[in-house]
Amino acid sequence: MNGFTLPSDAATWGNSLSTHWFANVASTRTQGLDITATYPTELSPTIGRIDWDVGINLNRTRLTHQSAAADGTPLLTAQSIAYITTAYPRSKMIWGGRFTSSDGKWTVGVHEIRWGQTTSELTDYTGATNSSSVSAYSFTQFHNTPKFVTNLDITYRVMPQLSFTLGANNLFNALPSRVPDSNRYLGVPQYYMSTSQLGINGGFYYLKADVRF
Image (cartoon, rainbow, N blue to C red):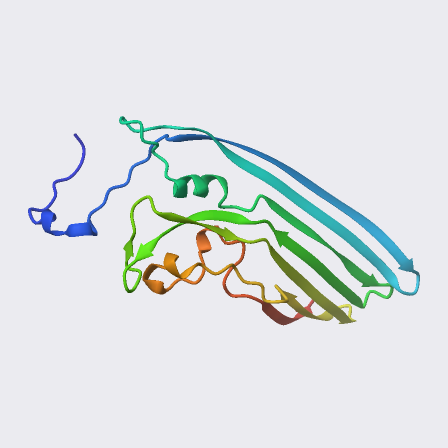
């Protein structure tokens, strides 16, 4: 048998010793659809044009089978099933456009992104500092509600070799949904990043120069 011999004092390690193994415990089925479209609008020879675009992604993952232990207990908990089936948004939509002036000096891009909801099963904690889980099967269903993100960039080309861009990713500083107090380990994490559609840094604003030689 392959392995290693534990030190003689291993029994005193308490919870510091754990093992992990892979098991083929479930079967899933994922279905999805992607749609993209673009459309140009000529405003006038003296004003410019707008190039519109839209993209939609729809997906769904379902659990079709899960294995059970010898006593008939399912091997997957509600938390594990949520990680597999609802931890990622079932939809993502992007729509917007880019205006280009007729003289090529100005470009303005605006896009709105909608992330669908994610759902997870969060561990319930107890104690004065939320330091202990209630049980291995005690969870609270948590929804990261749909999120909207606006991206904007405005570019002015001073000359063919030089342009400046003022922009923002996540213009209105959208953030993930906050985790309930009873599901924050040690009372610390405000957000549950494993199933969050967004990062926790909020808006990103920038000014850049593009120089071509």
